[in-house]
Image (tube, rainbow, N blue to C red; front, side):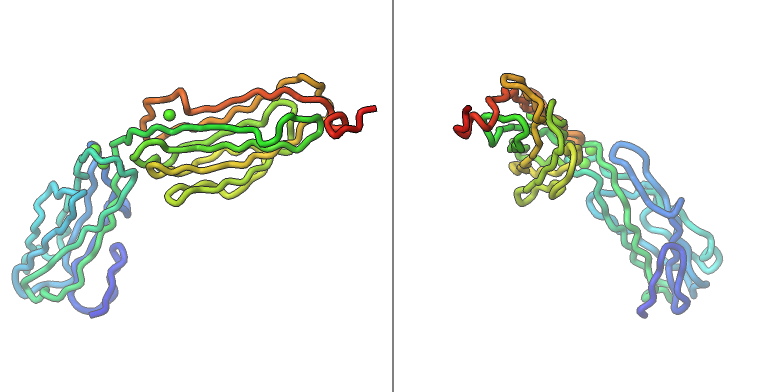
Length: 265
Ligand SMILES: [Ca+2]
Ligand SMILES: [Ca+2]
Ligand SMILES: [Ca+2]
């Protein structure tokens, strides 16, 4: 033994059940398209060979799940058709392995293929994603480096797998840079330059926190407003409470830091 099958290539050796996946892969959609592959034997058996298709809970065999190969049709491929089980669970794209058992005709110990099936989901979680924003430095001074603390939280129990986070550059600022820290079960890029615009991941009840730094233009005048907006979009889940999916704030530029530091002339 110790033989292996990769796609439709068999390593020469003992008897084997040969696999050919249509278009080289097997992909099924909940509530949508199924897929097929074919099986044949590597050599003529001594009698009837039975091959049984073994699936888990996410896949159903639409064709016969027990194939019989005889001494005459052993090398004629037989088709296995699979569909996804259309459950109601939001799972994202997931995977299941299809195994095969074989018996009879001298094929009792034959090598059998394992098919990795990709399953596209059609169920959406209900999640409530929320964003809050604070300004760490207040008041803002012309030319000052300032920091926003932005928290993105999944307030629901269900997972949001690929929400999109965005924060634009506040007016009259530049040199934006940021760092992000994620709760266990959540993920975000660790840091970056420029506006954060990317996919994050928020398991139910988890969040990520950004510290976003910008430099206020030295040319702004006292009383000018600096507007900042951050938002999150659920993408693969449904968010029935959209009022908390963005946070914005307007902070007025204070007096020049020379004055605040007591160096008034
Ligand atoms: Ca479904
Ligand atoms: Ca599902
Ligand atoms: Ca929300």
